[in-house]
Image (cartoon, rainbow, N blue to C red; front, side, top):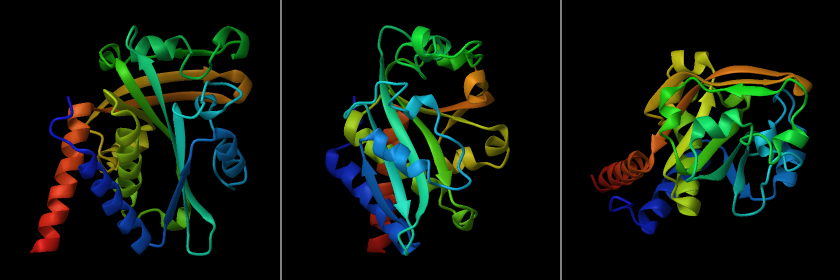
Length: 237
């Protein structure tokens, strides 16, 4: 059920956000080759290493299952990156997916290092199932922070995820400070629960305790339609 959302609505939504980014000096590119994405992200000073979720040597990320977004400034330097993947959780749920480590590794038994584990204490994760999109690895260069880009950057990801997969849910994991500062709200996520991913990957130096944030398909549909409608009214007035 698309709640009346059409492909034209989604195209307009992406176009609106792309125009906002260009006016602010950012130009988006995207791709579905995650090897290319790693070549980009490993050269970014100050960005933490990309997690196994978006590493082709760890996860199944063939075209159609994942894509990346990057933005360059007016001089052509990378100022922003983020990535998305889709998983078919029709016979399981998000909590089980995370705790099995299949969110990180195609074959956890052979790829996960000693002592690797993930616990999910967010109750809603047991109800997040179906075609589910994960939104992560988001990074924005310091000189672009604090300028109100959060909704634009997340919105581009939301629009492209809808166009490619029309997922039942889209989710992310964020640190407590992102919740406290209201950044998750500005991204557009309506729901949040603590301890969504308590992840330990000792061989990679990863020890996280993050909030789960998410949107349902109907909520994402309403966000897209509302943005398009508001923009059209604003331009006509």
